[in-house]
Image (cartoon, rainbow, N blue to C red; front, top):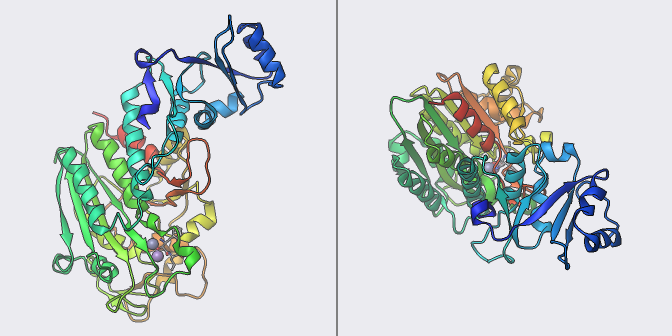
Length: 462
Ligand code: BES
Ligand code: MN
Ligand code: ZN
């Protein structure tokens, strides 16, 4: 993606793009010469919002692109992303000043993502010149983080098992001089992660927990926890085929926190970063955990299993309990946790949960500013009773018979494992874009991490 943005000095004879609307189109075309004028009228082009016209070179006139737009479309969305598929390869430069150039460039670059691991797709994509006053390094930092998240989600489980996911975390931290460990298999029991072990033990690929840190030990502690279920069959409560097709993306939370970690480390933010990711496959075998089992947990609470398909909250609970032990200044977890979150808000608007009203307000404001949509839902305490168990301290799912509020009850379950940390935010993400949109090619998606990068940058600037 970073290759789609270039400085003027690198551009090869860039083609000018003129943003036009129905009022301005005639005067702009007038300056391009007679042949251009004929071409434009032959195509019945009137500068309609969203419509792009490439005007070819003819004698005495220069090739140009007309980009129909309205103020609103340009300033509030990734509108420029549509140019990536509308334009032939080559270099382009915007002649018309844009109201929010950074978002425009971001949309363009985010649309240029292609997943090339198994097949080189298409030809070269267009490149866009970045004005001199734009912080290109920061844009690259963000783009690289998003790309990492998308790549990890798009990689299928046969090439990204628990071992490969943990290896990707190790590699990222080694690149930036961080350190940590991966606790594997039976060691999880000895070291106190019984639920990570229970969920992942039926897989041929041993479950593991990656725990890495980076940065100055005395700096504010920012801890990221991600759900790393590399594939979710549902376990013994097996999913129907239609619900399983996309389940390679069930490590989307892990992918997103790694994307965010990569931004934080590349930008060298003055924080002590910690990333904790349980890497497991929710598989089926004779030794799989079962409905009705009662599991011990790191926190000490006993947990009755209501449905083996609610596995994410179990592995997260042990990871969050670990994170909470040192009371970080900010604790963020991200997870493709519930289908209910998507039912409530759809695939493009992940809910987030926190008791910290100030933090929630900051997230909401930066989410809008960065065009990284997020919506707060409540940790509604009256629903906590839905998690009561007759034989254990808590059930991990709602067994009350009232089957509503699935995303909220999942968040409430997690909250039982975070005791000390006040600034804790949980994101129930979808991690996937179902159909192409400007800035969002279909496939694995980063959600919330551009917003969170802005938040952490602002909160802990040096
Ligand atoms: N990984 C799924 C949630 C999911 C499904 C996210 C589809 C995005 C799209 C999770 O492990 C799960 O299966 N959750 C169950 C919980 C239920 C059994 C209480 C769900 O949401 O149906
Ligand atoms: Mn599941
Ligand atoms: Zn899952």
